[in-house]
Image 1 (tube, rainbow, N blue to C red):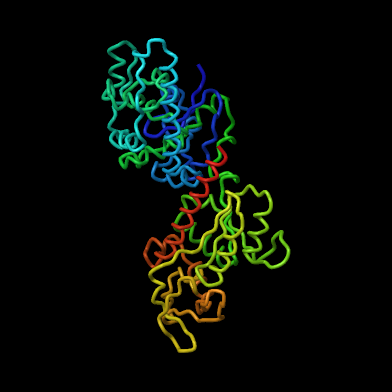
Image 2 (cartoon, rainbow, N blue to C red):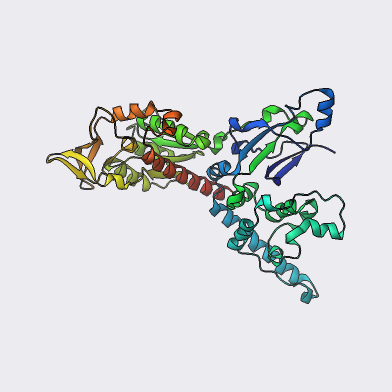
Length: 438
């Protein structure tokens, strides 16, 4: 009969394979998600009789759907991606119906059904949380049991307008699995992202159980590794080493669920392009060659960063490269700044907000934080500034641990804004790359 391996959420399968690993879903998980899970493919009576352990057969990757969503988005599966894929599918489904109607001699018997709009389909998914659907196994298939399998969806006019692959309905054995057939006609990750729009589904586990397949000899355990693959990671290019240390530590503390998607490079050190080591020169060099990496050039929110950002924006960057400036914050609009007229409150957005300004600036023994105006940027008619004692603020942050962050001993609100901007831009880049490569 063979051994099935599938990717499922709450008992609804979105992808499966028989007698082989099939699609590699390791990028949805991290090593901490590797755990033992009970399986219907395991004969537990046998293990009780023999007093053997089913541990190896129970091995799986399991992660709550809410924790899978940010990984889906960094793989390019934002809700925008799902909308576009659905609308393409619905258009083709309608055209196929129209073609059949034109071909049929008795066209009166062929009515072209208008597919649900994406928003209507989304509402359908949100209205039917997976846990609320009957998962009772129906063994014998006859007319009455087929209606039982369809359950609340039997005869639904809404269901009739879903552009799904109805020929797969025979795979269903319960109301819940029938729902899975109705919604699973896009990429499996699009289906997961769509199901996550129903808040009641977010605590369900996304499960990829490989133990039975490995035990049966159809695959090796080394085929099941977690974390983003190299081609799925994003390369973040920064101007200095301090940026890398701070961002790497911040992601590890505040966004560990996606930390493996990010790699950093400091262009102030060795790089393959001669001349100045600036981020502008680095970006210009990469734009001229066929680099396949997904790359974001990250600039400080200061005068030099904005100038460099504007210069790179003038390049004809390929679709796999983006630019990003650290976000403007209201906290920086009235910030102490030391200049010729002494210390005055100034808006340092676009003038002096380097990465260190996004740290907790209440550092014992240093008094109120302030920037110092340095050089004048004639092209933009602004002064460039730098945070005083920035190295001390950076060291204080790098000393923080997950425990001190959880305990509220360190203010990470501004850093969270930085990471939100970086992760959002990264997911947008991944979406563009995915769509472009399809």
